[in-house]
Image (tube, rainbow, N blue to C red; front, top):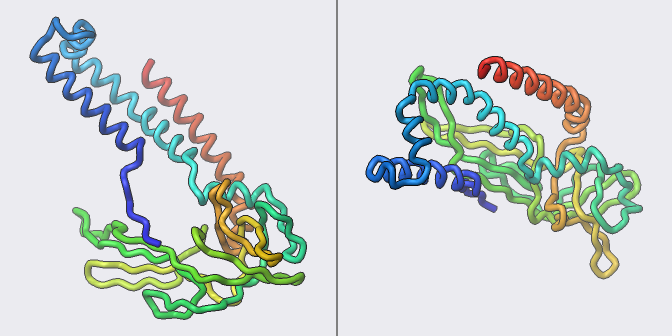
Length: 260
């Protein structure tokens, strides 16, 4: 499945607000006293340097707010990480219908060939990036294509095995398996391979009495990650959260001092 980058609703809102302010200012230059908020805009126009200085001090606050909302913005990967931290790991032989977390070994049924190295795999996440150079001659990368492909596979633990329907699956916190590049393109792939030890969060369902796991349409999550990687994440994520909280408080104090 191919994911094309689109402007978010918030992006359209910001563009709309900036365009409205620009057009309103042009109209005020033409009609002056006839426009609403004439006195306020006139004061800003007269004391531009003073207001510009205030805006400069507020830039860190705006950046902080944008980062805060970016962190809080929901995504499938964040939902996965939140769920795996709260769900118990279930035995495959005793899964109950509903959202579940299982850990086990991947079993390939029908292989795929990966796009970069033509390796046999269960599935892959593939990206193409344009390579450019900045003013210092260093390479910069811009993603122009991304896709996830995955065939039906099984996961097994010491109690049994279960089939996974991979429609909508997302590979979480997995590093690139293979990277290849030309003079202006870079190609990266992350592979799911037979025999890997993985942790998966999805929805346990059944058809004709046969259990399987699919995407949880209510929670909008079907994610998979390495067992070792998620252990490291769960160990250090609280420390990262405390660090970000401390930095936020320090930044707010600095902003408060600057605007006094």
